[in-house]
Amino acid sequence: MDFLTLSPVPLPADLVKLRHEVRAFLHDEIAAGRITAHCDQWLAGWDPGFSRRLGSRGWIGMAFPERYGGSDRGALARFVVTEELLAAGAPVAAHWIADRQSGQALMNFGTEEQRRTFLPRIARGECYFAIGMSEPDTGSDLASVRTRATRVEGGWKLDGTKIWTSGAHHAHAMIALVRTAPRDENRHAGLTQVIVELPDPSVQVRPINLLTGEHHFNEVVFQDTFVPDSRVLGEPGAGWKQVTSELAHERSGPERILSTFPLLVEALRALADRGATVDRVRLGELVARLWSLRQMSLAVAGRLEHGRDPAVAAAIVKDLGTQFEGTLIDAVRLMVGVEPDLGSPHRLPRMMAEAILHSPGFTLRGGTNEILRGIVAKTLRVS
Ligand SMILES: Cc1cc2nc3c(=O)[nH]c(=O)nc-3n(C[C@H](O)[C@H](O)[C@H](O)COP(=O)(O)OP(=O)(O)OC[C@H]3O[C@@H](n4cnc5c(N)ncnc54)[C@H](O)[C@@H]3O)c2cc1C
Image (cartoon, rainbow, N blue to C red; front, side, top):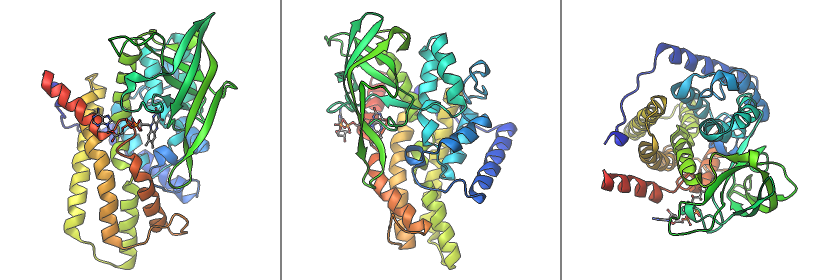
């Protein structure tokens, strides 16, 4: 049952120092008015300048080798930095996907030319990626993607539609999962990952607004979109194996616990300002649950650091973590009695509204909780 083991991970002194450096940097950014805390900033906080400032400090691409512009400090260092950024509600969306998973996919499966083209720009916070997995009628059942790639001279032509594609309207590239061979009994065969560089006149990116009215995700339509052979990622036909390893990175991080954490901080600050007493039992339960999840999430980073498969452990933490993100909203509502208001000049009602209106996506994005439980159950059955 090694795949379920979540061993405690004590952080070494250099990472404690790193945490303090990140906190000091964030303190300065907030004090100077360059950034403002919001909930769910890893989806919604798009700030290229902030991404570049993080990149210049070596805090993007921390898991990439130095020869590709990274700092080669590994998964635990990345955990510490991302945890601090999320806890502060900092605007990290622009580089998030590229740093978390597309860069890793390029490291694992990319050619030398692809790595040298994209990774240094990702690490500088200047190159953003989108994930092209979901399609209309094909979210959970990823193997049934219908976007077709047809062989042509020098590459492939894509036709089809992706949906819920976060950040595609700003992204410099999307890694899309496409069908390069017809479906047969083996549903996982014939799939390939390709890098589609954006913008491209043959790719339509149409906005889909969130409940808040914000534009963060899209429908993306390929019509005779040419992808040269040099932009096939990994082996043609090996897309399923590659995409599932990418999903492990997508599901394993502290963002699956901390999307609403800034709301808790803001609520406690507001209560303290009012001189109000807090229901200590309720708060204690919340913090204990958060701390347990945080230790579990850190243990998943420990698995990544030591090259152990994180997929099943990440599925468990993501399921529990995203439920917690919603519970936190309910608990805060009971504690503070403030009316949510997206347009409020005050932080607490504004954050409350952000958290509530973003919350339907928490247990869906990156694979629904039912699907995650299916992964855990199947693994237990065969072990
Ligand atoms: C905020 C947000 C951002 C997103 N960003 C991206 C992105 O950048 N790129 C991308 O490719 N996708 C993205 N997605 C899409 C996301 O991955 C899908 O929504 C998700 O995989 C579910 O797919 P679906 O919406 O088609 O739901 P469906 O697959 O239709 O599922 C509907 C319901 O049925 C349940 N269900 C389905 N199959 C099973 C089963 N076998 N067993 C039990 N229950 C089942 C599901 O759990 C769910 O409750 C995003 C989604 C959100 C909410």
